[in-house]
Image (cartoon, rainbow, N blue to C red; front, side, top):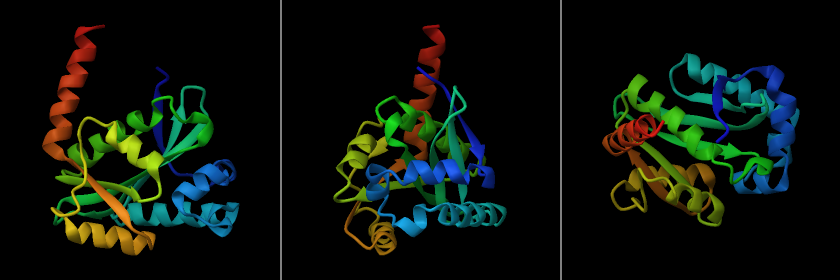
Length: 191
């Protein structure tokens, strides 16, 4: 499987990211408009992410494959260090769908969330109409699905932000780290 790297945002990536998220498949799944997917919109996003990262509120990384191509972005959003939680958002450009990049990107950024930031919960979700994202999340063995009743305030927050009904899932620290240890040691034993 092709390996990925997560790298910090840089304004020099704006043109490429803009072209990738301007794809109708990606843009519609993310609920973005032409202004947000324009080069200027992406530059504003990058600068906003850089500021939020300095303020320790968000962490966003560009996903690069082994051919040094930008293939997407993954972000820890709304980091609440007191409550030990955040939300995650990941998008992969449509030419790279189905190649395992989503799982790899989530694994790498979740290690940061749980080991570096010491969070307990990372919420994931999707717009109700975004079936592709829901299916991608359901494939992750450490994901707890349909946690709307357990965490109603997080669902409300997500739906206000998205301005549409959403489903809410969560990655719990213990579940992820148990899975990671088992998966990591399984790979080592088989190599």
